[in-house]
Image (tube, rainbow, N blue to C red; front, side, top):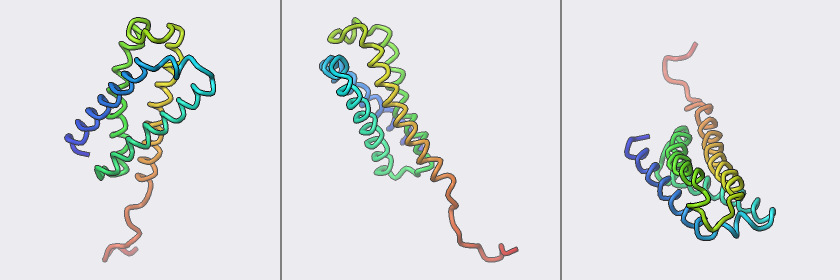
Length: 142
């Protein structure tokens, strides 16, 4: 993976984090303070969507599958670091939600980031363990 790809994925991660944080800043109470079923549907749907979009971008950019874990880390890291001040000042920065909701919000974030990184790790490991070619080269018979 090139440096240009890494920087692009970091920028994409920053954009996704900013957009997601803005959406939850405005509408978070309906996602995190409603029913338990609604919360878990949001956790599952968002995590899967995050992973599918991120891995889809890597496939579209023709990143080798063995490098997808590296790409996923580049995408996830800006959001993971960006959430530190958000969670530290949750009451002030996410004022549309109750302070007690910070734990649910943090768990939601863990779910999304771990889904992306876990799927990328699985796909990278799978690609790395497959033989490149079953064809023997001339003069390599034993």
